[in-house]
Length: 112
Image (tube, rainbow, N blue to C red; front, top):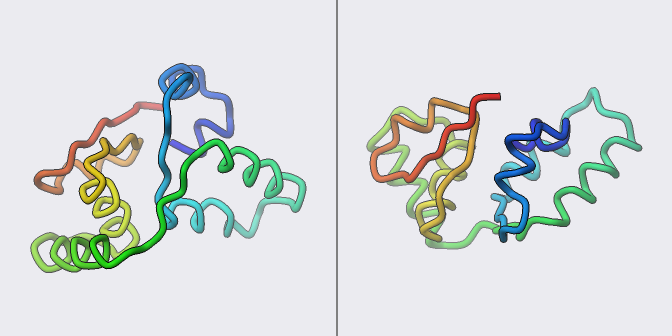
């Protein structure tokens, strides 16, 4: 979803406009660590991230992610993102349909 937002995808921009949006620290790291982006683009992405409240790792997210990995076939970054959403009881807005397989995760899939 962040990539779609970076590309000013109207569906994503309209959905987030006027809301308080949260971002997992994992998504922040993933977005800013793309090697192919220029320093100028990286700065633009940091400004975009500034509009989000970034949620950092804490013991509750850690425990939830461990449980998700034990019960589901999920990669660590995805488990941390899902756990963040679950611990804070926030819906997860994503274009990644893989999150739908995680039970008890409120997931809203965007087609971009």
